[in-house]
Length: 535
Picture 1 (cartoon, rainbow, N blue to C red):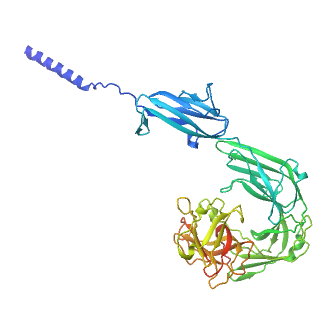
Picture 2: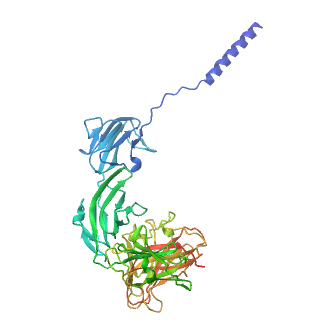
Picture 3: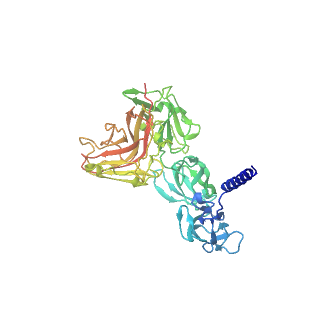
């Protein structure tokens, strides 16, 4: 019995030892840490772009590095905390760049063995080059050219404080301002004392690099330009006090435009006007819409309280709809400018109606004003035959607004089909509201109608949309009565033909198939606008 107990104790002890050994993990020698490349620059998310005189951090957190050398171009950098400004062996350095330009910074690393770069195993020596763009500090500057009342460039004027003593400019003239600021500003803000417009802030597609400002009011004026960028942050301001004096003009007073102002007609002139309240009986207005002809009474004529170069015609309570065609006649009375120029008679002055262009909406990607386009953004759509018989090019020779338009020439017996696409060949698009009534239009400046615009099928231009194209959409036809040498607005009506919000692209088709000579014109400010139908 005693022997059995002894054996039992022995077996129990053996089981406990085996169980303890089974629960003890097997010993493994530590593996060496893998060599791994990892480098960061503090402005790497912003193309390593800094302004001169500001710092950039270079940080090497690679594992397994045995030797490290940063190398900078001589004379362009200040490595903070060390006398040597060309090379450094530190894993983290702060560098101030002293010279603008594009600079290459090299990093040489040697590892204990082959090193990983992301998921690829490379050798034990790695050389990397980092490109740093150093922008100069912004220095705001601009030039100004005098544009006379006929639109002719009379050359550059001298900009200086007190320049009004020599810069005496006739009322009704304009100045074309071109930014010449250095340091790569991204946008420009302007204040034009006495000008129209009186100020400018950057807007999509227009950073204020080139602006034309009309001066209609007598007086002495100053100007200010702020050129700036957000990152790397920088800004500079230039101001010229009393740089011009606007003086009485010997030129005739001109009409800039007529436009709808709610239920009134506004007429903007090239100079400020005297009190016009006695002139109501000398104006007449005609409204046409879908066969209706309305001749409202002009019950009052007054100056716009915010702009004395603009007349407001009050129409005795008549409501205006933006689908109306409105024209104005004036019989000479005593209406004159503040420098005593008499306003001449005019007839059939067309009124630009108030319409919201959906091509300018945030949901649209179209360059409806051609300000940011290249020729490649308005490509031929390969219909073949006569539809390739044209030329199309972005031009700054004439513009209805901004500085650019599309110059188009149909060949004799030719035609055109173009789209609007990005560099990848995708359509620029817009998003209408289904079921609404839209007007599709554009501004054109005809240069040459050709010898026979009144052929059997007249030369014309049509705007299609894609997808869900309506090939029977309206067109604008060029005839012998089409004005030449002036900007005119042309349009067609589209009723409830968009089946969805899209997005839709555009195709523009031109026809000159029966005209034995070329037809040429400038096209600008494409417009697709919802219209209000007169009951």
